[in-house]
Amino acid sequence: MKWCKEKLDELIRLYPKHTNIEIAEILGTTKPSIERQAINLKLYKSKEYKSKIIKSRTRDLSYENLYK
View 1 (tube, rainbow, N blue to C red):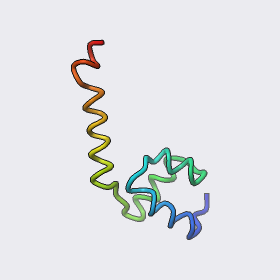
View 2: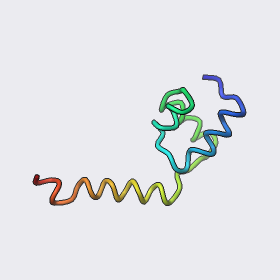
View 3: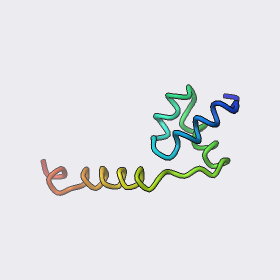
View 4: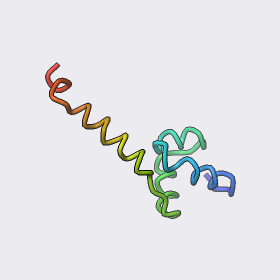
């Protein structure tokens, strides 16, 4: 995929708060392509996004979920 200014602007807007898979679907490209561009542009996920992911992973690994 060729990255035009509009797609790059949308990537910059979406990247902090969305998964790379979600962004890839929105922009019509692949997850690896999103990852490469994010690295090139030095983009980072927001603290809120990281916190949400950690909470969901912790919940998935809770004692109750492991021994259902």
